[in-house]
Image (tube, rainbow, N blue to C red; front, side):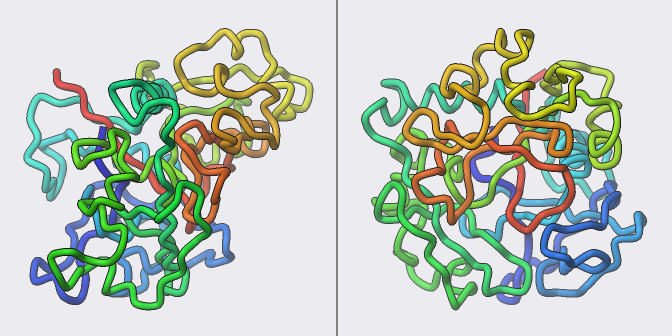
Length: 326
């Protein structure tokens, strides 16, 4: 599992230059905040038209990067599958004999439970939220690899994004991932753990309720057309209009275990579960799952938080891949 959620490559002080184009093209153009035809996907280098022919840049998975947002679930899923493809155009990862895919709810659940066990932070010490909010930037919403000074701190809006993505000293800004405060945002409480699972950007997971049409087809066609079921979690649609509560209580769904959804929540709609983490299950219009909470979610963020989304590009949702050795 990637140590950090996906981040943008390149900045004005990085001599490495711009990120390279991946073979994945944008397939959706709608974004939550109304930017429907243009987006600064390459961060502040250039604006691009999302016409279906524009390449998505390869991401990086490091601390102190702008979280990669404005990418729909289908495109993020496709990009995660390409990460392990050594023959893909411009692939920068030099991976071999790996199976790459977007994280599933069962994989998120496995890491969440490990963090809650004696092998992680334990069940009395919550992971501290990454509350850094870069919304004053043109397009960036969150920054990877930071921790607040308390578990459920309010969002910390930053004025100088450069300071947080290009730390100018060995200590860096408060809460940087390798500092004593920053390590509180790790699933293990030290630098060996996984970061950004609480706060930062919400993260797509490869799960959806199978309504067979609507946003599942519009935004998740790449995920839905994946023939191999091991790469996704499909939830039963109850067929009566599909409210989130009804789908959550569908017997076939409730029998699923290990996803840190059914075991950690009770109603499925607009409520709180373990550690008061926020949850709201998928429904017809919002058939896709996201996890972890955002930088402004305060006490509602957490490894057991889950939410629903329509699947289109959003400034507050990112993603991360999982690699399996073949």
